[in-house]
Image (tube, rainbow, N blue to C red):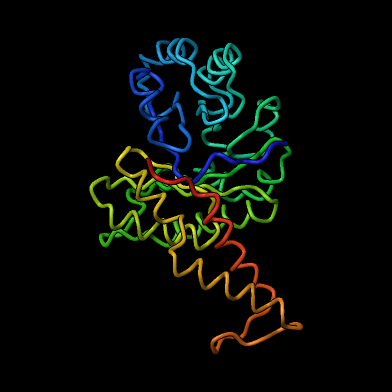
Length: 274
């Protein structure tokens, strides 16, 4: 199994819009060419043809396929087999059995139904899964609900639970967790706040639906100069300490040192915005 190393700012692009492929990849760290929800039923075949005829860098490209068991799923895989793409996003992943159908691919398992959320730990344990993502809107729809967020813009409790469940499942099995999209495109302040929380909580990336969101996501995942400086000083102080020690009035033990190392790792891994 390969690890997920595509960077934090991931952009969906409809697979039936090949005119947007290169532009999307230019703006994002990775692109999801979407054969599922972003493509109308009547355009699925043309989307597959576009996927085959307009190749992108396979190291930075994910293809979202339709759910296992659908006619579209089989046709999606037949098209992908004609390309160099080997990382797919499996829409509405619900059971480990779904993953057997894509055994030859690195899989970003999209848990976006009630069953998928409940089975997230079993899904994360699958050998071909490299990352898990959750989807708020499809989840609420699967429950018969009408909105994933409150009027304030914050997630409802069921959405927050699903988000945490996927993050915990991914972390338990050493897989990357990808945070769901922020659909209020003009609200960049809201996106920033949500993405800062995602990065601090342990998500490795955030999916997005518009190029304007790329720089905000990168900003959120990149620690501030002050955070990097403090993490550096904490780790330096730890070299002269035996076990638990006090740093600027705060008790520091191994979990806090791991937090500091994570800050420094994000400062190195987060690409500069272009």
